[in-house]
Image (tube, rainbow, N blue to C red; front, side):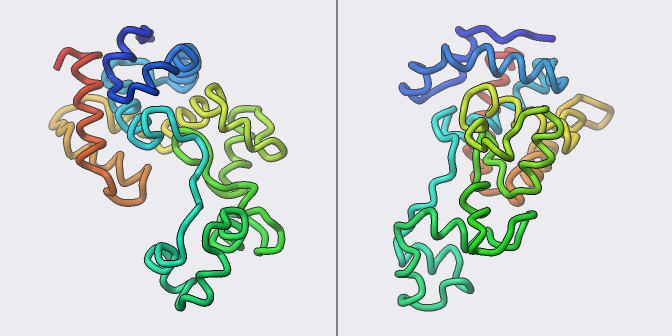
Length: 216
């Protein structure tokens, strides 16, 4: 297991606020990577490249659901087909989450409040009752009853490393015959993001992590 030092983490960060808070992340991230076999510099660079992008360099651990009416219509045009409907949910994160995540991912209906309770948390924004349940079972951590455990460094790091391992992303990071690291990183991005949103920024973060950990 390659242990990443505070000095190495600092070299991977560009956000001054992230640099100031790194002391609280060194041990949780190293422990989580060790727990879920993200042990080689190659795997760690790919993992951290995605983590740092997804979390705004460890600064955003809870999903931001404060949207204007105009933005709601852009993001969810079928759910908010007109200004009057969108206005009812604008700048009301709890009400919005309960609606847009209702009856999905193991959540109950809108009145259950599951959408809000199990909104995105952690370094990879784990979302939905079903995903929280699987995470709770894997980590032996009661995130179903205390979801905010995923908004703390250790829970956030462990949940991200578990998710990474569960999607077999370690294997995509490893060198092998015919290995194309750029193509594999795109596959990793799709498995985390569901698409390639922010791919250029993710790649820049990955390149920086590789430079620090692999010298390349």
